[in-house]
Structures are given as structure tokens and as C-alpha cells.
Image 1: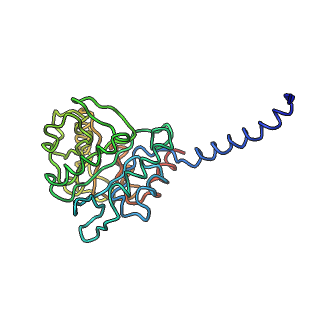
Image 2 (image 1 turned 180 degrees about the vertical axis):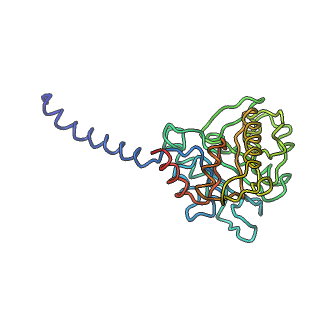
Image 3 (image 1 turned 120 degrees about the vertical axis):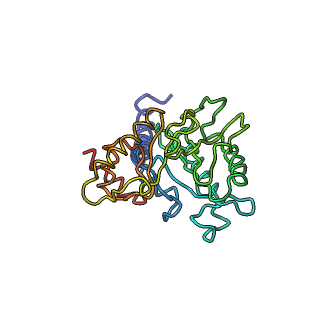
Length: 272
């Protein structure tokens, strides 16, 4: 019978190697960037993957319905048959979530997938709903107003309308509210966000001091949204640190950016 000393000598090196391997795996995962939104994410060199490498917890994909497929692109003329929502986002997300024990980041928060409808919702949304249903194992779902939280939440923006959810006993997506929805009494499980175009409401472009008028207007928007349990995001906004700082100071929840490593570095410097 093998003595204890020999057993220990044989097993311990393997255990140590396994621990180092697990440590390296988790060390490679970035800390989740809960305030970062990867605007037009699909335009990066590695859609989705570049954002996840930086820890982003919100990514955006524009989709067109062409020949029955949900194709990801900024304009119809730049669509390609192989660049489907499933291929670029849903399949790699499902694989990653499975690897990470049910989350996009190990033990991390729910991640948002903002889906911008580029064609009429009456034709594209039913197709999107069918696709999201096929991925119900990774998406949060809603039954009678109650949420079953999962790794991801789908948020529909672009050519959308609340009526697209009419008659659904199970809902697989939520609605990206607009500034006109600030006073809506709909549940935050239906309208979790308020997104607005910065330049349509504010004059400040990130140069010089932000005016008191703009600060007051921004404060009012954030407070109204938060009272209803919603997060705030602005698009078409200055994409630089001075603007990001003002947004965080005002309580804006999601910083819209095309500069993924820049925003990551901004938060790292801020947290030092």
C-alpha cells in the first residue's frame, strides 16, 4: 500500500498547478465597468470582445432585418450575411456565460445588450423576439411584470414602441425610454433606461465650464429618472474625460463611449 508521504508528493504538485491555472484565469478577467456603455460596439475591430476585454457591462448592436436575418451594421449598405446578431453577440455571450458559471464576468453583474432596431419594429421586433426566446437561457425574462434575472438584459432602442410588447405573456426584452418618458409610471422592469441625445437638450460641448442652466437641467433629468428606478444615458455627447467627469458628478449612470480603453483608464485613474 502506498504510504501517505508518496501520495502527498504525487498529488500536491498537481493541485498547486491547478490553483495557479485558476488564478491566472480569473486574473485575466477585468473588473466589471458598470458605468461603461460601448456605443456602436459592432464598429470595433473585435465586436463584443474588445468591450469585454475592457470590462464593459453594456454594449450596443444595431440590427437590420434582411432576408429573414438580423444583420448587425450601422447602415444597410454595410450589412454582411455572416454578421448576424447571433454570430457576433449571442453565441459568444452564451459560450462565455457558460464558462463563467452563469455570468458574463465571474460573479459579476447583469450585463445589458442594447439592440437598436434600424427597420420598422412591426416587422423586425417579432423576429428579434423569436431569436431572444431561443436564448432565454442567458437573458432575463419578465412574467406578469416580475423579473427573473439572468446574465443579460436585452434593451430595445431605435425604431421601437411600447405597443410592440402588447399581448406578451413572457417578455424577453425591455424598452429604452426617451426623455419624454421621464414622467411615465411604467415599471422600471419595462423601461429600465432613459436615453437622450445630448445636443438636443444641452449646449455644453465639453469646452470650458458647463453652464449653470445645463447643470440644473441635467440634475432635474437624473433625479426624475432615479425616482422612477431608471438609469440615464446620453448619446451624441462629447467623448472625453472632462465630460465623463461631469456626468458622474451629476449621477448619470451610463457613460456612452467609442473610446473603450480610454474610458477604462479614466475609471482606473479615478479609483486610485
